[in-house]
Image (cartoon, rainbow, N blue to C red; front, side, top):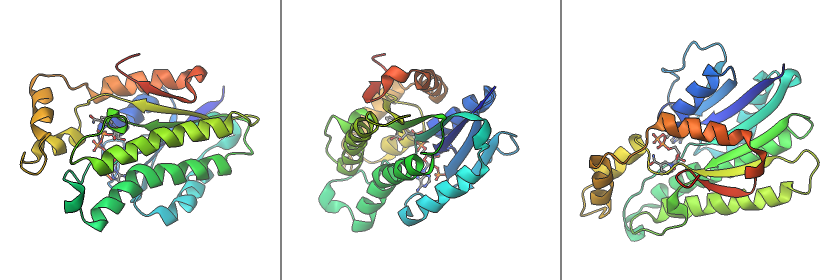
Length: 246
Ligand SMILES: NC(=O)c1ccc[n+]([C@@H]2O[C@H](COP(=O)([O-])OP(=O)(O)OC[C@H]3O[C@@H](n4cnc5c(N)ncnc54)[C@H](OP(=O)(O)O)[C@@H]3O)[C@@H](O)[C@H]2O)c1
């Protein structure tokens, strides 16, 4: 039987770590990318870690080449790219954000997924394997919020990008399926960052604290499980999937 291989960004913690763990448990190969090391996945036979800062957009094409060189392509019947890594900050009004903060957010949360997708589609086009890109999005991509302009804009971009690429691919032979997945509010470090801000700077931090204290955050493992189930479905291409509505 053929193998499944997944390139997953942001496997050092949160949703990405749970995704990697669940995929590995079911016998899939995972090629993980994050700035940190692979302390939780280290030593797993089917896991390979790539320590890389995704704000460095220029190195992504050769990163994808290096990863694909390690994938046993002849035996691979399914190859996926899960664009999970993102940056929430800066959480302040746009006139208080530095150029560096704005460009870092856009690079990590929008530029890197776009370039990874571009490289992935180009570098796998000779394969007959089923190919799929999953982009992690957020309600923030549809609902504007003060002090969240960079994150909201990146996620709105992710939604539009996913829809455009799905449209491009629909005309191709062996099209790459593209899906955007909104996990809802999940108990990860990203939420802790939002809760930890003082309300003077980030007025919504009170709301993030309320959701946490009311026990309304989803577990990253449950979210990862749901996402993996949706990956199987080919009918989900060209759609933003809101996890809480499905
Ligand atoms: N948590 C929520 O409530 C929520 C809600 C809606 C959408 N989402 C989306 O779900 C996805 C995962 O979020 P999460 O909550 O699991 O976030 P998280 O706990 O903050 O984890 C983010 C992951 O991205 C990696 N990452 C961040 N910057 C990076 C960089 N420059 N280069 C490489 N990797 C980088 C981190 O690894 P390193 O630090 O090791 O680099 C980490 O593994 C994101 O796209 C997020 O927008 C989350």
